[in-house]
Image (cartoon, rainbow, N blue to C red; front, side, top):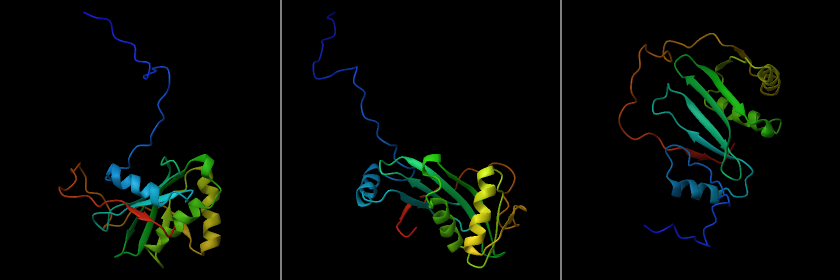
Length: 173
């Protein structure tokens, strides 16, 4: 048995550059195209549409290098004319730059003139939502639960078979 050969071109002590992961339901080629097409944008917004109108909608934000920096999850019920902000989170380094405001305005576009609610449990959210209320003239009432159309049935159900909607690049946020 021979000893492993030293390869001068292969230096184990050097770290390889990290590449950001490809977002779910995107091919590496499409993700590379999105990153290229938005290379001059400081933040990219990808929208995951629901397969069913009563399911959660999601936007994730990515920085110039392609790393995930924030998320907004919301749901709307057209029958009851109610919307709910379920989660908004933005990395600390990207807060106070108007990104949260832009995300909320995007969600509000899905339910114009609807009643909106949110939990607002964190100290940051308790400061953020009153500010947004003043700017948009829309009250975000305290979470009162979901309507019968949005209520989850008890028990786990695997996702329905079939293609999931591909994330869409949102250029107007």
